[in-house]
Length: 219
Image (cartoon, rainbow, N blue to C red; front, side, top):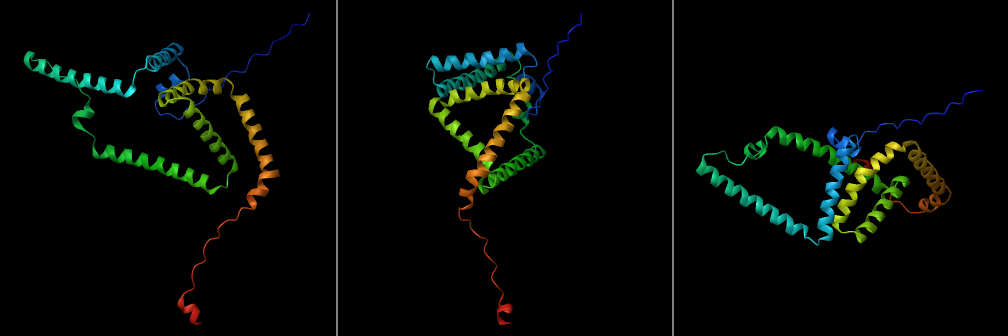
C-alpha cells in the first residue's frame, strides 16, 4: 500500500518594517504574542475608558500634567528637608541638546523633507496614474473615516491597523502581492484603453523659450 505524503505548508516569509527600533518591529509583528497582546489590550482599554466614559482627552492631559508639576514640586520640597535626592530627571533635561545632536537631527530631517518634496513633485506632475489613483483612494478613505470617527478614534484605528496589517501581510504575503499585482494590471489596462485618450487631450503648458540676446538680433 503506497503511502501518501501531505505537502507541508509554506512557511511565512518574515518582513521588515520601516522602523529603526527593533523592539517596536517585534511588537508590531507579534514576535512575542503575550507582550503584543498586552500592549494592544492596554491601549484598547485606555481608548474604551476615554471614549465611553465621556472623558475629555485634553482636560485629562491637563490634569495629569498638573499632578506631575505639583508632585515634582512637593517631592523636591520634602527632599530638601529630609536630605534625600530630588526627583530623578533624564540627562536630556539637565544637559539639553548638543550642537552635534542638533546637526544630526537636522540632516535626518532634511533627508526626509527632500523625499517628501520629491514625492509631492512626482504626484503633482501627473505622470504616474497608478500613484495618483492610490493617493486619491487613500485620501478618500481617510476623509470617510474622519467623518465617522473622532481624532482619538482615528488614532486608535491607526494603532489597530499597525498591530494587524503587517502581521496579516507577513502571513498572506503571496496572496496579497498577487491581488495587488492583479489590481495594478487591471488599472493599467483600463488606463491604456480609456483614460489615456482623455488625459492626452488635456492641454499642457510648454516651457518658455529663452529670449534672444541683443547681439543675435543685430546680426
